[in-house]
Image (cartoon, rainbow, N blue to C red):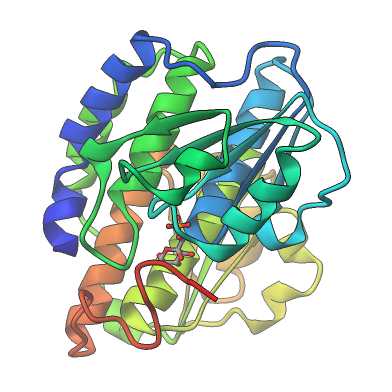
Length: 289
Ligand code: F1P
């Protein structure tokens, strides 16, 4: 399933742009103080969206792993993201948050338990996935959210198309370690790219803020490292990383489309390691405790 879902991203992003134009109820309004929560991939979408919204001047926006949300804190709105709509931490958090803040759930599944816990529910059924490893749901949702923030996203589907064909880094067999760097909203993307490499390929992957990488983590970089920078690299960083001998990959496309390239990298690595990405080790489509 995963390879088909990855390939369907340009079409899904086009649909997301249409959905955003219909102004779905429950998305944060400018000026509202907002928290966004999720688990795993959905937490990383929350991180990216929070940085984008705050940067767009639409209001203070915090992102939390659902298990770490300070439930006594009041926001104008809390947006809970869960593809499955069944993740335990999300359901627990919503049942507590609903007493103090307005809530919106964003999911891919109609009729999930979220329906009874959130004030508004946005369902992106067209972006649902059969895979455990999430790819098109998070990127489609981010396309929708960027459009909702007023960004011109009309070129994004074409970027996604290019991301499906432009070459991946060469000689990936030679890498022992993968590091993804980002800053602002692209830090969430870097976190998600690293998670894909871990989930799909069981490979050693890390992610950091580009500036933070200089404060210690760069110590592990060597010729067997691939360091992939999402978005613009902080001044001087690329030279510093190249000096370690690591292979440096930079964004050729919109950073969200770069994430599609990272999906391909994760699948490619899995294939080389003889792994079936549709049955990833130790993982389930939804974590229920
Ligand atoms: C999120 C999640 C991810 C995990 C895997 C399956 O669930 O559990 O954390 O890495 O990709 O999905 P959801 O709450 O978005 O359904």
